[in-house]
Amino acid sequence: MLNRRKEPARYTDREDAGHALAASLKPVLASSSPLILALPRGGVPVAAVVAEEYRAPLDVVMVRKVGVPEFPELAMGAIASIGGRLETVRNAHVLQEMHEPDAAFARVAAHEEKELARREGLYRAGMGPLSVAGRTVVIVDDGVATGATMRAAIAALRAQEAGAVVAAAPVFLGSAEESLGELVDALVSPWSATNLPAVGSAYRTFPQVTDSEVRQLLTAARGRRLGNMTDYLDLPDAYQTYLTTLDDDAAAAVLPVLKQSAAGGEHGVLVTTNLGPDTQAEVSPEVPFGEVRETVR
Image 1 (cartoon, rainbow, N blue to C red):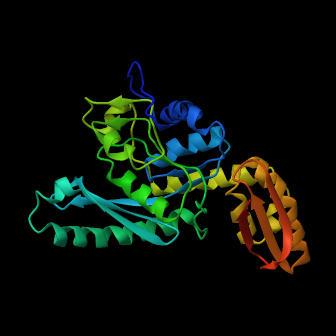
Image 2 (tube, rainbow, N blue to C red):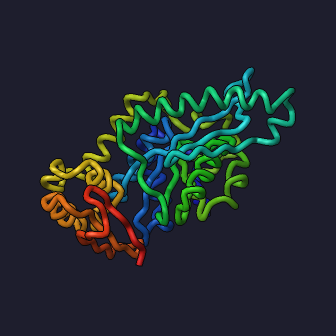
Image 3 (tube, rainbow, N blue to C red):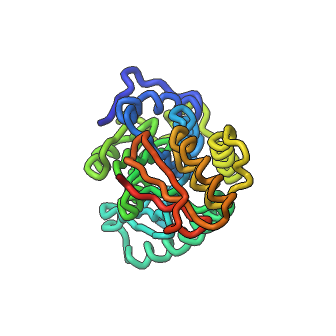
């Protein structure tokens, strides 16, 4: 599904685009508790707005474009990482026009893997990625041109056994939607543009997003999700991290049990969910202290 912008007009900035995208996502997310995953760096300000409007967890899926050496903006493919697993996609139509494409791809990909690892460490600040298994996941970017980075992110999520996967962006250029449509459960955008030269042309203001801004937005999102939960700072780090993966109703149900486990200091927590609003938790001797184990009913 691609929700088209009837009267194309440039977005004011990424925040404005985030509100437009959130509105377009309503038919898809009306009955789910989604996890919002941003493609850094430009996708993070857009995704932060979507996550706040849906009171949903926000995280990043680390993706790096593998650009042609002489023309780095032209993607030979992309690499993506989530949960410690690296996935690679290649743009065959670009590679077939190159001299020694395999060697060029391997050389650039090796460099991008190092940068991907650097940014992941910086953005997460010691926190692990949120679990995507069985979840409805919305991948958000500030725009999609070739679709290479989005395809890599989709591959990474499928490898981690995500539930429904939604590809979403404020603008899709050219034939990008066609290349992605069969890979996802839903494709959502307010604007499908056939005559824009670049994603930035869809915005009045389109500055580079810095690493510092990405980290601030992720930290703020985590803070909002934990802000109403008293005494959460007394919980083990693994429990705090787990809370950020839940929607507000599930977090409210699980928090007292996490506190009970922390006070006892002997057993971990077993969470039973139907992947909907009905979530139950209990301290369980079958789970080691400091760990949370999920089971789906």
